[in-house]
Image (tube, rainbow, N blue to C red; front, side):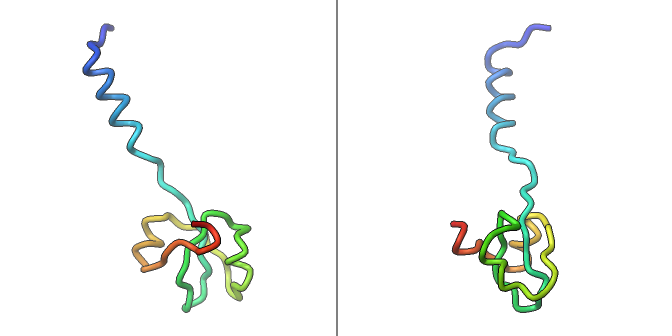
Length: 71
């Protein structure tokens, strides 16, 4: 199968900007305001509830923002 250069470049370009779903960690308490990329982030050390893994998209949809220790 032969591909022309424009088709190959288009394929590489389109796949390089589609990152996989990013997982983040959030504190399960009602007052949580931040999400974390690492489950061991020190911003989660004060969580008195269960730490849950979720998608970045869902965390942002809940109004959570990135933890200051991780930006």
